[in-house]
Amino acid sequence: MRNYANRGKPVSDWINHQAVEWAWHCDKVNSTAERVTLVSYAKHCDERGYSGVSVRNIASTWHLHHGTVSLARDRLISARLLHKSKKRRGQTRQTKVYKLPKIAWESGLQTDALKNEKRRKSVGKVVSKPTRTTNS
Image (cartoon, rainbow, N blue to C red):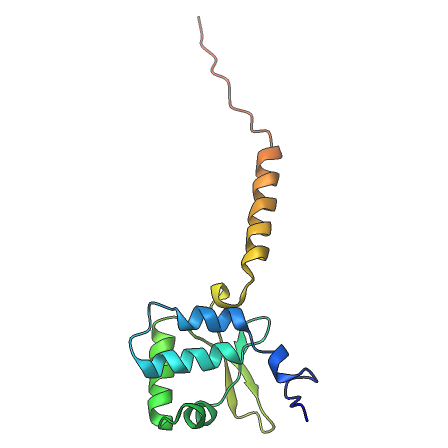
């Protein structure tokens, strides 16, 4: 039997692999608890970077104390690797939702395409330089 946890999609389809890869290779992480916490938030983030995994879920998955995970989450917020949002998820809306930086979840190909489009628009513009007039 397949597990359909996220809006009817199989579990293997909704893991954000790019965000997990970014979280695993992030240089700003200082401890193992911070790294596994960041990887867990990245694993559960949606296509817009929002992740609503609970501290208890992360603690049970990685066999850590929930206090260690919440301390690691606070350090990630202060390092600007996680951002607070006003959203909440879960049946009782008690699970806080955090957002990963745009670099973590945005597709690299999409970013390059947008950069090339902006470059093409800027090349097509004609910039007229003011001419100097001298009084003789």
